[in-house]
Length: 66
Image 1 (cartoon, rainbow, N blue to C red):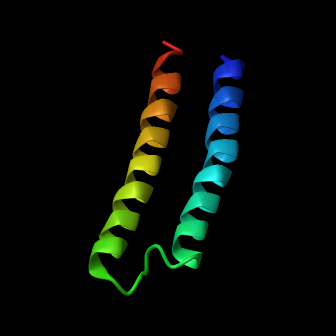
Image 2 (image 1 turned 45 degrees about the vertical axis):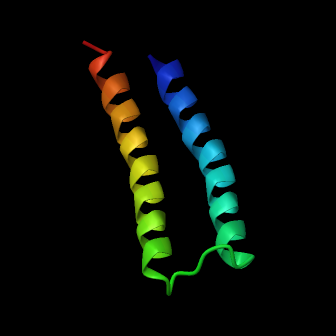
């Protein structure tokens, strides 16, 4: 069971770093702007999806204990 938590931590910490870097590059290079409503909505959807997948994986690992 411990391996599941280590795998989840690795996946979302390392993968999250790449995800954050990609978002930062997108907004830093001018491909998107937070002042634009559609870009702000896109950012919320992407972050919500990331946190949604994280939540489902944590719930799945927790329920696998039973």
